[in-house]
Length: 147
Length: 147
Length: 111
Length: 111
Ligand SMILES: Nc1ncnc2c1ncn2[C@@H]1O[C@H](COP(=O)(O)OP(=O)(O)O)[C@@H](O)[C@H]1O
Ligand SMILES: Nc1ncnc2c1ncn2[C@@H]1O[C@H](COP(=O)(O)OP(=O)(O)O)[C@@H](O)[C@H]1O
Image 1 (tube, rainbow over the protein chains, first blue to last red):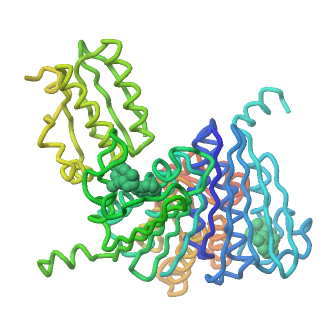
Image 2: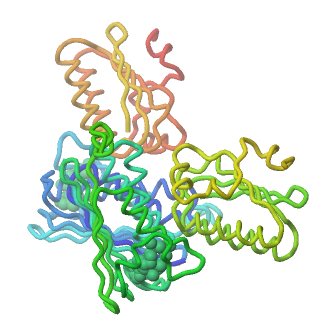
């Protein structure tokens, strides 16, 4: 089964749940396990939250673009904002690094550990684009081969 | 609370559920009752189903556009396809009129009876656009005033 | 949506769960017609107890099977429509033509 | 997400349900800080039994309250983490610093 859903969400906190659910519904159309769908939800939640709070500084009048594509048993998720961007991506992606003292700096870690691949592109002042992929059943494969 | 979600869905049957859920999640952010959210789900289900099966003749490679906007306590839903269009809109909107013998011809009736307003625009060969609105609590109001 | 099927004598009992739209309609139509074609069953008992949503696509599949059964001398009975989906079935006039009973056993023993 | 709160002596018991993200984080932070500011409570008991999802935004709100309580001599205890959200809390090292008990009564009676 192949599917693509592209959604533009107002940058309000409530839409993080909408994004999560949308990704979960598309993933559920393939052979992802319940645990894998939960991992996808977490990764999407982190990426869309970042776009809303970091990208747009929690201002509600902007748009977060989410693209969820299913190629047979591989899911690709794109999360894009046209917000402030990231100066030092390598630094931002490190655990416990956050520009907000009330946050944990675990967002990128969770995206990385719960998906098979993570790519971040960002231009300061222009915006950020996060691309993540996950194969259905990849966990079990990894475990089975001991990798 | 104000919100807008715009989504482009591949014209596959599975995305009718995605559309429904999305509209329900946005509606749930306002003061719609559970019963009203169910009515919105039904109307969206009918409109998106029509786009998929009538507009695009069940071919999966097309795009259905859904726009859900919340203005305080009023929800506006747009469902658009660029499919075959409707020759006679007035006829198509009548109960029990369907171009498919296996269908009931109740889609437009359900949209009309479950929402406060329904407008259909269509150009044969170009596509169809359905616009529906619903106010939170309008049912109770209608009942209370006996209208 | 999930569908659970069992055949009891000449009846197919279908227990439906969740949201019933065009996807469920296609599956229900395919399965019921297949069993009817192969003369495996003659009657349909449709348990709606755990249905949370139902639209005109599923109504169409339901009525389509009803029409077929009537022509072939079979019966169709509904079990346990939840209050949330009842208005949709009522609006389509389903209760004017289909019988509803409170439990599967009554549907199977039934008249 | 829904949050149910009750105060038992000097403890605030918060029962959380559903998905906990930045929206729940803001609500939890606001309520807990308000009660702590007004000296209504000194300890927090967070019941996660019916939580189905939890992300780093909520983790941040949880740890933020924990830090505050530690400075003010209060305690924070978790109750009933479901298996689905446990890995997320573990990854954040929550169990290294927070105590978890099986029931609210133990949390309230507790050490
Ligand atoms: N979409 C974005 N736009 C701007 N900055 C971002 C974006 N995403 C992440 N960042 C920056 O990267 C940092 C680390 O992100 P993350 O690992 O998700 O942790 P956290 O969200 O807890 O801060 C953020 O604190 C922020 O400074
Ligand atoms: N998006 C659309 N594109 C093309 N034709 C449409 C569309 N929506 C509705 N129609 C036409 O209008 C008719 C009536 O629609 P409806 O009331 O929803 O009933 P049904 O879907 O059961 O046929 C359809 O049978 C179809 O011919």
